[in-house]
Image (cartoon, rainbow, N blue to C red; front, side, top):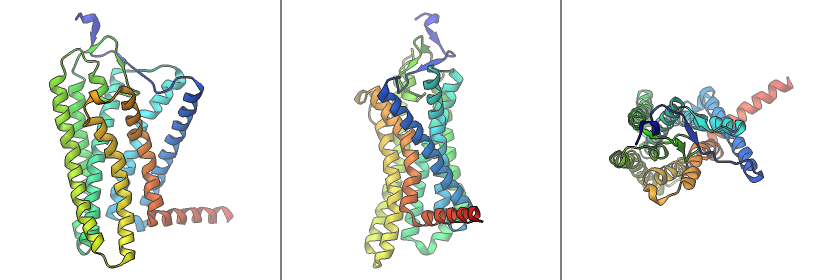
Amino acid sequence: MGTSNVSSTSDFILVGLFSYTGPHLVLFFLMATMFIIGLLGNMILLFLIATDSRLHTPMYFLLSQLSLLDVGFPLVTIPKMVAEFLQGENVISFGGCATQMFFLMLMGVSEGVLLSLMSYDRYVAVCHPLHYQVLMRSQVCLVMVGASWFSGALVASIQTSITLQFPYCASHTVDHFFCELPALLKLSCADTSAYELALSISGVLILLLPLSLIFTSYGHVLGAVLLMRSAEARHKAFTTCSSHVTVVGLFYGAAVFMYMVPGSYHSPKQDNVVSLFYSLITPTLNPLIYSLRNREVRMSLVKVMGRSDFRVKR
């Protein structure tokens, strides 16, 4: 192949999700509304955790990191997609594509690790409540959060740097609405089969190791909950843990489909839907799941709203 058809620094063209037809315009505004709701929901949750002393516990500290990741996830993809739609241009620079891919992998891996560590927190709270303050002391929480961010940064750095070293063909049209590694590899003029196999193996490890910790933790939690004599204690443990299990199911369901199911079994259109799910829908639903099913968060929100009403009346 001639050098005129191969490039490593040209811009990429992203295939957008929406056209300018009526139904697509409705979907576009629905997506923009969901983006704003998700952003506000996670920011409110971060504010409540930071300002309410009753929420200064290990569980809510970990939840604040989840909200931080859920703020970042949509910010990496949705504003760019909105700008492209409004301007009618779907072009992204090589550097912009690299940045987008890096931060998506950073936050995706970090969130997967963080969710597994949050399940360990629930295991300690339910199965070893007397030792909770020791096992989940502030130093341990900081190490857990640091480990999740570090693992995300490490994986993102390695995979982004390797992916962007491949030569890319002249079309440069990414069949996706943002720069995601599987979609970008399809444009490479080089043989990427060995790298794709390595990615599949690493993807299985990155997904299965946290999932194994989650299943193990909640297996012990379920056994402990069933042995509780107090109906109130069972209800409290079930409510708290079910919120986390719901979030885990939403996140890992999309991740398993995207990175563990072979690419030949799903189309680019399905990839777009799944990517939209974990980059926008899941971050929007997470604060709603935790606030609606969590009494402490609801009480904190009512307290803040009551304080605001008092100031307005005064």
